Amino acid sequence: MMKGKTLFWIVLFALLAAGGIGLSLLRGGGTRAVISVDGQVYRTVDLLAVAVPYELTVETELGRNTLLVSQGSIQVLEADCPGQDCVRQGAITDGAIPIVCLPHKLVIQIEEP
Image (cartoon, rainbow, N blue to C red):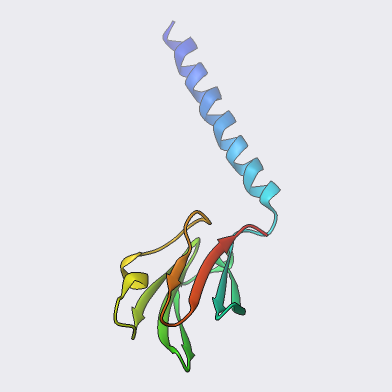
């Protein structure tokens, strides 16, 4: 009886793992962050291709934001705006809620290609 339960769990976990791998392959290309300033695309970053986290500074006449780009996520580390809402939001990993810095007209949205 115990062998049957163990086999059941092994098969179940194997199927779940295979399903996850299959979904990853179907996405084709990974998740990307689109960084826009005043409605214009400033830069696009493939978040799944990031091997080592790095900082990216977006500096315009409106102000400066320092971003942390990591595998699968992006966040604003520092901003010279008064509210700091974009910094407090933390990292985003999906397209549910973008990061917005209103004073700098900065929007960071995660999209699936």
